[in-house]
Image (cartoon, rainbow over all chains, first blue to last red; front, side, top):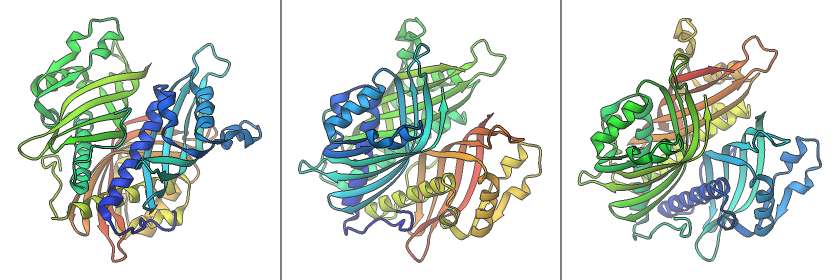
Length: 160
Length: 160
Length: 160
């Protein structure tokens, strides 16, 4: 995507604009359902065989990252719920670069900000973080775009 | 909106995309005119009979929230001006989920961040806040989309 | 733009929506390539004869602002690289108001947030800033939208 800024020409500008908007709304639900702890709805923004790569979140703490690569909608839901259900979280996405690669596939990059606060009594209080999501999306047989793969890279972490 | 992610099919994808973009720009003016204190322009982003529900902003301080429900464009302008004209404010919207429900009506949810600073000498210095706007929009006879109803819910407030 | 919220009607809603999305992605690359220090790619988001006006960044420190007005893609790249290559930076754009003024020209306003951190040992540690970009865009012969002019105004600066 870095070297090819123009979106793929699928021959139908209106359909492509609608697909990009639908993917933005999928990612919006990802953030909103996480921050409002609606975990069953959160699961539905992922394809059933989605892959989430949060290995960098472990590696920056000197831990092997392989446990941060999670396969499947159900495991992703449990992984994220276990990580942040006890915290007040606010996640914001910014500046999407979404590229429709076929009528049912797309790729995208988002800038992101997150604030995770486990409260004053927690052993680990929390963080403010900045980075990018690198993602792919697929459109299911039901016409809904879902996250197929997502990987988080970081620019900066501040301890709370 | 939580259970029906797909936008209503009004049969015209290009018109729907244009309406969604126009609503995003309406909300952008809401933020910009508030933060640059252009109050007459701010008023115009609301329908004349709009309703703003900021009751939660009062209730979290233990005050009855009914004074935070404001009816009409002119009252909304005065309410917001009275609240923040003396402060440096920055408001950002994120991750809109806008659903066109008819050619002249729509609903939407936005994540938000606001920073309100009354300065070091103020009795109440200010806050950083996080939450969601829950809104409806109407398209006027002049072709302009305006905010019809808006309600703010909060995830987190930090005192400045 | 303040008084004329409706976008110019160029007679082709789908083409206009595609142009607005392409400009958003151009600005997304501006932010991402700056924050990931990919300076050659950063240069390419600007028209060859682009003008960047950061005079306000100098003037608020009591310095004459003329050195902050930079002409040409190559000079802009060097100016920004010199300013922030040594810092961890995160820049986010918000709430674009993009108006297509002809098939090859557009104007836009973005709310913005930036965090610039030169580290604990630097004479100037850095800042968190809030403001607006006021920009114009042109579509080149290669079909790519680029930043033609950009000027940053500030609402607020916090020292790190």
